[in-house]
Amino acid sequence: MEAVGARFQIVGLMLLYATQLLAQSGRPPVPKPKPDKERWSFVASGYGSIVPNDQSYFTPMFTADRKWLHLEARYNYEDQETASLWAGYNFHFGDKLVFDATPMFGVVFGNTTAVAPGYELSLTWKRMNLSTQGEYVDDINDRTGSFFYSWNELVYSATDWFHAGLAMQHTRAYDAPADLQPGGSIGLTRGRWDFTTYVFDVGLDQPSVVLGLTYSF
Image 1 (cartoon, rainbow, N blue to C red):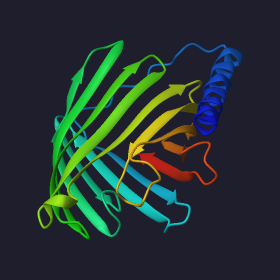
Image 2 (image 1 turned 180 degrees about the horizontal axis):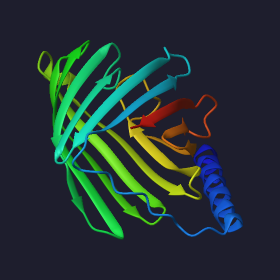
Image 3 (image 1 turned 135 degrees about the horizontal axis):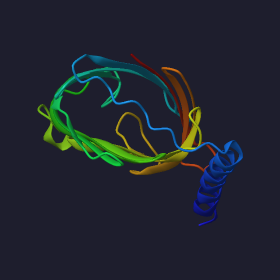
Image 4 (image 1 turned 180 degrees about the vertical axis):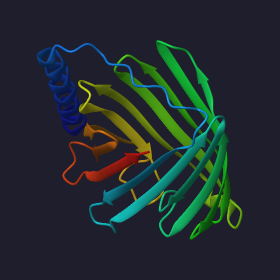
């Protein structure tokens, strides 16, 4: 129980610090410009996972969107030395309270060979964003190897350049101490670049860390 209490104390301090930064800035929320749906938009990202007592690894990802079409490629995401290709349909609703949804279907190949229905959901209000993405990896070689993966975030953007929040993942990419790994995030944004640090299993002697770098264009 002491470890669980320590986790929430650390994450709570992160969110309190973000709130204080917003109060000091005195700047009202600035709405992000809407993307031009007539043109392609791309996001290239890489995530370095530092895993205690296990092999650390790097996960590159690339997405392409135009109007309703969503395309995505991942590596070391569902499993290590495993790639996946995805296609999905973009839905967008709302103005002040914005809801985005992308149902997807993917194929997985490498150490794991599977088909995978998945989704990406996002709810945004002012500077608060709640997002989740998940997939069911249906292993075609070994049904007992099928599993559900998810990544969830609640992020508060205190300023245009600083954000912090809560995160939780359920992964099979390495042997995690628990099926669900709670954690927190803190990040910096400059122009098209975003750098975010995630810490999972906060409060344990050896938490896992994920370093993410994203470029949008």
